[in-house]
Each structure stands twice: as C-alpha cells, then as structure tokens.
Length: 443
Image (cartoon, rainbow, N blue to C red; front, side):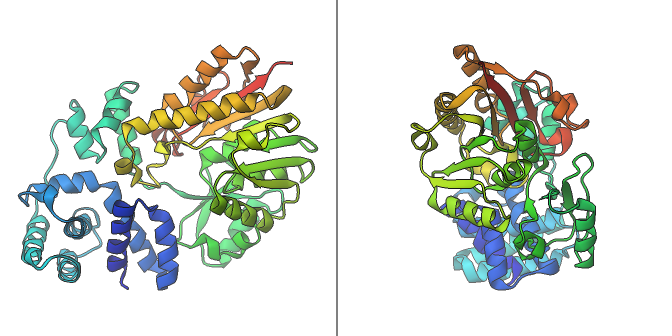
C-alpha cells in the first residue's frame, strides 16, 4: 500500500471511527513496511491534513457547490490532495493531482471522478485564497488557522488578540519529537552519540538535560535503547511533573492514573528503586502497557492495580505523596493530536472537570498529614486547571499551595506566575499546553 493510500485509509478511520491518528500511523506503517522518507511523508500528509482540515474545507467549498454534502471518501481525497498542493512544496502539483484522481477512481463514486480531477486542477492553478481580517475577526482567525470557532472564542476571553494568534499558529506547528532519557542509568550525551552511530540525528533540549530532540524520522519502538527502558517519548512539560513531586527513597507513593507508566518509572528511579509505589489505572489495555513499560525499565517497587483508584485506595494506609495526572480534554496536545480539534465539543470540558474534581477531592483523604499532592493535566483550560484547584483549596482548609518555582528551569520561570500553579502554552516554551499544581495537606 502506498503512503498516499494508507494516509487516505487512516484519515477515514480517524474521522469516522474516532481512532487516534498517531497510534494508527505507527501500527499501520510497521505493518506495511513503510519507513525512511516514505514514513515521514505519511506522517506529514496525514497529520497535516488533520491539522489544516478546517482551512482546506473552506478552500474546497469555494470550488465545489454543496461541498459539505459530499461523501466522506470524496472529501478526504480532496483534502489530502489539496494539502499536498497548498502546503507541501516538495510535491510536484501534477503528482498530487494525478495521485488524487487515482484515489478517487478507487474509493469514490464514479460520478465524482471528473469533479475531483477538475477541482484539483483549479486548486493547483492557484492562487491560494487568503483569509481577510484575522487580526480583528474571530471568525476569520478560526478559518485562517483551522480551529473550531468555539475554541477560538473561548481562548479570546483570556488572551489578547496578538497572543491568541500566536497560540493558534503554535497549535498548527509540529511538536518536536522528544525523548526522556533515564539519566540514572545512562548519560544523555553518551546516548546522543549512540543514536548518531545508529543513523539517528538528535540534539540536546535547550533547557532540560534529560530530554533529547530526535530529528531523524524513526520508530522509537525499534530502538534498542527503548527496548532496554533507557528512553521514553515524553513532552518537556510532562517531564517536569515528577521533578515537582520530588519523590524520595523509601516513601510510599500513589500514582493515581498511572498508564502508560512513564511518570511511574521516573518516580521509581528518583527514589533509587527503594520504597513503594501503588500505580492504578482503570483501563485493562493501558494497565498492560504500563506493566510492559515497568518491566522494560527495570523497576521493582511498583504494584500495578486495575480499577478505579478511589475504590482501590479507600481502605489503604495514607500516602506520603500522590501524583494525580488526571484524564483531561488533551487540548494542550493539538500539535501532536490535531484530530482533537474536530472531535472535542465545548461541553466535554465540564465533563472532564467533574471527573477531575471527584478524583482530587477523594484522594486528599488518602494523603498523609504533611503529605504532598501534585495534580497535572495536558490542558491549559482553567476549568481543568487553575480554577479547579483554586476552588478545591477554598473549600478544603486542610490544603495549602506549595511553591515550586525553584525546581523549574530558568526558561520556564517566567510562566510561573502564582505560587503552586503553573500553566504552559505551546507558544510560550515550545511545550504542550499543560497545567501543574502542587499542594500540601497541613499537619
């Protein structure tokens, strides 16, 4: 199967069934034996089309009367081909048009074959339609930067127009492919030399010593360092969480929503593999994945348990530290998961916030006096982050915020604007959108 055909198949599954694009890309590329430059082309074509889908639809609707009523298969052929024509300079226009017509003849109704050919030739001949007024109109900004209008309106309430446009632009950028290096077992500089010898170009992260940036398109699961538990894919913002928790050898710690287990591994090695970590997850498949991660990483102090963490820990002794990396809307990860722009609904945020509140308030009872809890979500939305924790602190006088500014890299400190609370955006420090809070239960 060619990369273009596979991109078409994956795009359909993502939009029709709600599958995750990156998981499908990794699995299907390996199954089809696609690697090297073809692998990079597949990723760029699939994720790029999802990333710019709103803008592509706006352009295509100018050429096709009743565009929104077309079958999904026809729209996807047009989207994939238009993305190549408008955003991929290395693809010759004749190739994008020709391959698009071939896809149409294989997957689309016969009555649309000629239309696809005609539309793609018009798109190829240009000019690329521009969007006017994005500096002052939210509707224009949403169209120009391919975001749902409800999200743009929501973000405008807390960002000025200039920063809003920076945020939208950053969301459409490509997140760097970063790996956390288990520096307890391997020096990051040495790892970079190893990877270079294996043909994988990489470079150090600008402000995190245990993070490296991978430049060469590569399936990380095929790296021997991954098989040995020495590296794990992780965003720089996520890598801050365990640093802020400050786990210590011999402590009893709860990892409340632990899968896939990367932070569990980080905690265990920060503790010198001494102490006890109870790691819970409610999804069997994710728990299995976490167990594989723990085994691969040589961690021996973790007890993985399947189930709702609130029920699991109800009758257990209190914990000295709790990490609640809670389920969330994932709206801080749109660079990596652009399909979420079109999948999330405005009401989803309140639903996630209610789950997060339940977990947070229930687990406080299992925190020992003087104990520390770190709460984190890969979302910058206040209802899931600062507003949620502030509301809980006001209602529970056993809790107090804990300053952690001294634990942050210098590049992150400008965004640490309130004691115990950190919110990051992609356009700030080139990380995922993220929120971290640190609280203590008073003695």
